[in-house]
Length: 164
Picture 1 (cartoon, rainbow, N blue to C red):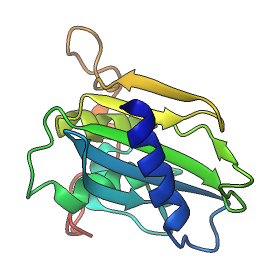
Picture 2: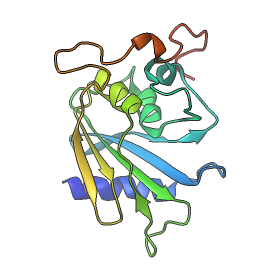
Picture 3: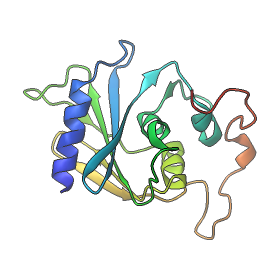
C-alpha cells in the first residue's frame, strides 16, 4: 500500500507547475483509507496564519506543502488518523530521469500535522528509498512539556486571516 500511495504522490508532484524560483518542488498528499483527500504544493514568497502559529524558524520564506494540504481541508474533514506522503523533486525530475530527494517534514510541519490528527508521514529520501515516521509534537517532550520557548515560535497575534 505504501508503494502505491507513494506512486500516486509522485504523479501529483510531476504533474504540477511549480513557481519558477523554486529549485526543489515539494508536494504533500493526504490520504484517508487509500483515498486522496487533499494535495498541497510549496509556494515561494507566501505565508499563512497556520504556518506563522507553528513556525520554529524565522527564516522560512515559503509556505510548506504540508501546511497547504492541511489548510485545504482542515475545516471540512476530520484528519484524525490520516497519512501524508511528501515528495521533493528537482525541477528537471522526470519518469525517465528521476531526481527525488529528502522530503522529511520539518519540525514546524510535524507540529501542524500532529495537531490536526495525522499520525504517519511517508516521505522520499532518494529515487529508490522512502522513509516513514510516526508524527509527534516536536515542540513537546515525552511528558507533554514545552521543549522550547513557545513565545519565540512566531507571531500568533498576527492580524492576517489564517486561511491565506
